[in-house]
Structure formats: C-alpha cells, structure tokens
Length: 511
Picture 1 (cartoon, helix red, strand yellow):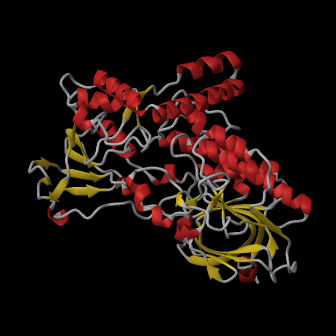
Picture 2 (cartoon, rainbow, N blue to C red):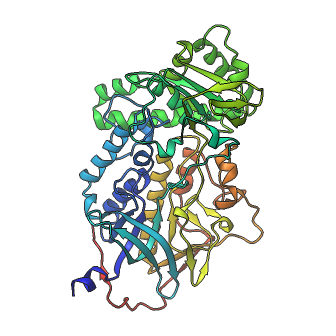
Picture 3 (cartoon, one colour):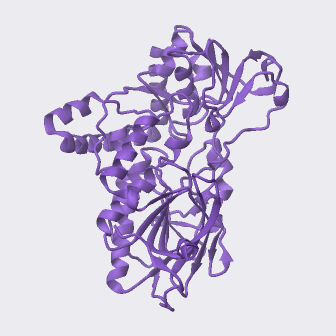
C-alpha cells in the first residue's frame, strides 16, 4: 500500500525545472501572484543555486552588480555590489525561507523526458530521483499543465575542453573550472590558465592572493578580451540606502544601474572606435609602464560583440602590475612534460594547467521533448517574446540577457507568464502554442561572437528578424514588449479535448 502511494502520479498546474536564480525567482513570483495554482520546483542537484552551487573555483563571483542581478522584490543587503558565489547562495536561501518555498522545492529530482498530450492539455514528466540516505534511484511520473524551464543554457556534467595534442604527456595536474577538485593545493606552484573569459579574469587574481597563493599565474589567451575595472562597492547605492531606507534605496539603485548599463552598452555599440579607445586608456592607467596593451588587450572585435569582462577594483590588473601574474597571447601547439609549447616555439612551464576554455551549450538538460508522439528538435523552434517556443504548447523558458544582468529579463518573463495564465483562465483556455508565420527568416538566438555561442548555434532555438520573434537584449525594449498586450495573432489558444483526470493521480502542493 505504501509503495502505491509513493509511486502515484502527481498533478501540478505549474512545474518549474531548475532551482537556480531563475527558478527560485519564478517560484516566488508564481506563488505570490498565482496562489490558486499548484506548483512544484524540481532540481536535479542536492542544493539550490544552479551555477552558484556548481562552480567551486577560487573567486567565483558575478560579473553583474547584485542590485540588478538580484530580485526586484528582495533588496541586496551586502556592501559588495559585485559579490562572490557564497553570498549569492546565501541570498537565494534567504529567498526560499522568506517565501516558504521549501513546500514546493524538490531536490534530487532530474526531469529526463517531457511528453505533451493535446488531448489532455498537459505534460507528462519522467523524473529520476535519488534517496540521499540509501543512494537508491527511482523513476516518478509528474503531470503538469505548464512547464517553466529554468535550466540555464549549458551542460552541467561537462565543460568545453579542446583536444590538446600531448595532453597525456604533461606530468602536472590539469583542471577544468567547472570540475574544480576540492582542496586543490596550488600554493607556491606555477599555474597556466588557458582562456581569457570571465572565468580566467576571476581566477588569475584569486589564485595569486591570500594564504596558499600560487607562485605565479600566467593567463594564456589565443584572442584578447575587453576587460574593465569597476568598483566592488557601489558607494552611491550605500548613500541611497542610508538616505531613503533599504527598500526605496534598493529600488532607486536598481533603476539607476539598469539605465546606466543600458547607456554604456548602447554607447559602446554605437561608437565602437571611441569605446575601444576609452577602454584602452583605462587599461594603460592600470598596467605597468611599457606593457604591450595593443597585443594583449586589443581584441579583433568591437566592444560587446562578446561580453565585456569585469575586474572588481582592478584586481586582475593589480596582479599583473605587481608581478604575480602575466599575460601571454599565443596559440597552444601542444602540451609537453613540463607545460605548454606555444605556436611561437616558446614553452610555458607549469605545475597546474587550468583549462578555462568555456561551456558546452545545452537547453533543458538535453531531455527529449515530445509533442503528441513526435520528438521536437529545439533547434527548429523560434523564440516568441524571448520565452515561448513555436510548436511547443504550454512551455516557457528562462533565458536572460548576455549584455546585462541575467535576472532582469527573467523578472519580465515571469510577469508576462502570470498575465498569460490569467488571460487563459479568464477565457477558459488551457492550451497555448506560438505559431510562426511561414517563411520567417531565422538567425541564431544568441547574437554573440563568443566561442560557446558559435559552438552551440546548431543546438539552440532561432529568432526572427522582428518582434515578437526577435530576441531583444535590451531591458527597456523587453519591458515594453512583455508588458504590452498578452495575446496576438501569433498565439493559438485551445481548450481540453478530454478532461478526465489521470487514474491514480493526486494533486500537488498549492501555495
């Protein structure tokens, strides 16, 4: 009898997949504004946090300020505006506790398959669970009227690591930041970090400071990256909080930062030559006299063709200026016993090589998505308003910005999702699917030149040339689009064909 109860099919109005910053935010919005809907949050890992729980490398932090990366409904209280992962996880745990989300949160629940039935107007989710005490695995079935996929956009099980010739010859240790070994001892050792993205810009100063610092860290890059120093502490935010109080001070700071960031990105993209010159001047100020700025910090692309990297308080530049770190711009020819042989013939000696070479993109954890018996190829779908997918009913996804704080877009998506559900309820609909106009021109959903975006193009949905099929990367533009009319001619609504409940089913938690 007990086994039958445990194995019963559960029914929810909304299932959120993923308990990272997007999923926890969505759960808070939905529980507050859709209180009559049953809700579950399924998280494959044993803790919340997503990216901030997965990555454990030294110095892991956000590139965005937490006044915009944080939630609109929950002020960021720490002094540091650019914060390390432990503070971000603390913030997320506070959000769960303050909003009673423990009731709807299910850890160790990995969704491995999603099947939609138009006849029943619901999703059937196949979920693998594990017992933390016994390690036993089980498969469960969950039904949902809606799925909100907050799974991020990259693979958690493996990072991108190119095939380097001679890798097996290297006598030291090779580490990928996505799988950082606990307790890795790099004290007084020579380290080479391959890569020049946000991870490398974070690792270099973190590994060269404090107890157990490396003897020297070399950042080996094939292509330079734009790097800018920004204050770790936002003094204006502190003054506004003191003057206006925590809630209003946070709101005003958030407004200020949203528009400042928007203006900076728009300015750099509109006037790339001036932007490049400005960034160069700032770099020269912070680097040693005579440093070859044009070789190491002069990318072949314009600002914001790839994401600009942030160095809080200029820590990355300080490490170079003080001789604790250096930058080499060259290609890897092969690994050797002692380190890395470059295309120029130079050999970089290393005790540890860190391959900060990027991510492998993958949506929805790679699960098969089946609609009425036919498996959907996600790469064939078009994004509607940046969150719904053509041909896939009652399925929303959380994809944030690449040129500003990820969370800003997610909050707008949640607002639109709530309005859409209310619109459907008021008219007796329980199904909605976007339908793209025939012959719509398609292009990659990520307008970035970064390696991970290029590698993942064939795996991701596409976008069209104009709204509502174009993926906006501007908060002001999205704020208008997602706060406008809920329905248009691109959405097809429907009602259930067969309303009988599933045998043995039981309702999930209402919040």
